[in-house]
Amino acid sequence: MIQAGVDEAGRGPLAGPVYAAAVILDEKINIEGLNDSKKISFPKRKYLAEEIKAKAVAWSIGISSPQEIDEINILAASLQAMSRAVEGLEKKPDMILVDGIHAPELDIPIKTIIKGDALEKNIMAASILAKVYRDEYMIEVDKLHPEYGFKHHKGYPTKMHLEALELHGITDEHRLTFTPVKKIYESNR
Image (cartoon, rainbow, N blue to C red; front, side, top):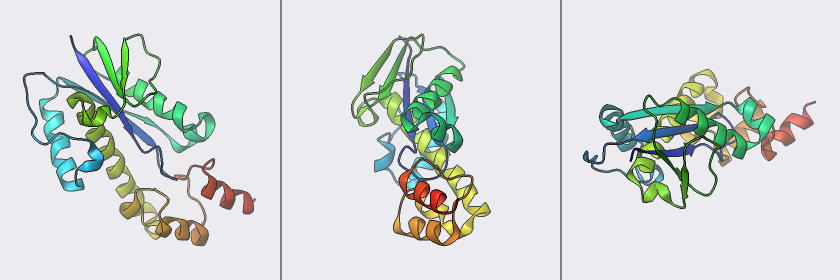
């Protein structure tokens, strides 16, 4: 049975897209160091991401933009990104393993697994790819808007980010329906 692991990165930030990855690993191939992406340093995640892409049977990334997040809500946008990631796989899996309790609607059997990113290697791999791709995107955004410090906080609501929002206002990367951004957006209308 061919299983694909699916996970997302970026549900909590105030800025940037939500990313999802779908990964099918060969059961016979071992990738040393796989774990929940949040438990791995950025350099190690980047290294593992390259190894995952090189050794995976198939992998794909799905994205939902900040505008889509505002239109349909963060949960629906996360599920949409997951669907896009699965649909982008070059090989169709027999089963989808999704981290957490929510799953996209697909024409493939799905199993949700709480803490799946620490239990299933396909989900661990998806967790790493989603996080690396999203982090790299936010590092690029930092070049366009260095005053916000995106390369440091990746859009999460840190003190630095909230102060930059107050000082500089919002960008097109910000999620207008997220409370700190919404307050600033509405006060400037």
